[in-house]
Length: 117
Image 1 (spheres, rainbow, N blue to C red):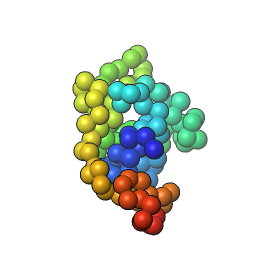
Image 2: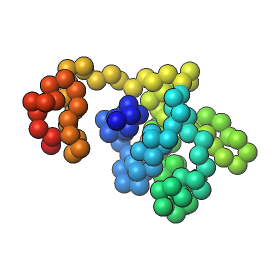
Image 3: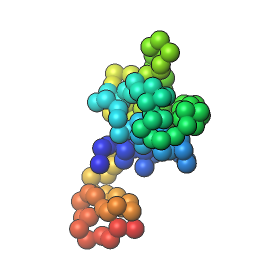
C-alpha cells in the first residue's frame, strides 16, 4: 500500500465522502504529494457529482488534510498535508516493529503471527 494511503488510514480525521476523495488524492498524487487533477476529473473517476467533490475538497482543506498550493487558471493544485513545502514525506513514522491490521490484512514485523481485525 502506498505510504500516502497509510497516512490517510492512520492520521486523517476525514469521514464519508471527504475520506473517499482523500484516498483518491493519495492514490494519484505525485512523489511530492501534489495533485493537479481537476474537480471534473476527480468526479468522473470516482463517479461522484462535481459539487460533492468540491464540498469534499473544501472539507479536506478545513481539516488540514490537503493544502491548496497554486492556482493554474481555473484549477487548483493541492498538496497532501503529509508532505512539506519541499515535497518531502513528513508523516510520523510508525514504529518499525509495529503491526498494523486493517480489514485487508496485517503488515509490518510480526504480521505473520497476528490475525487481521
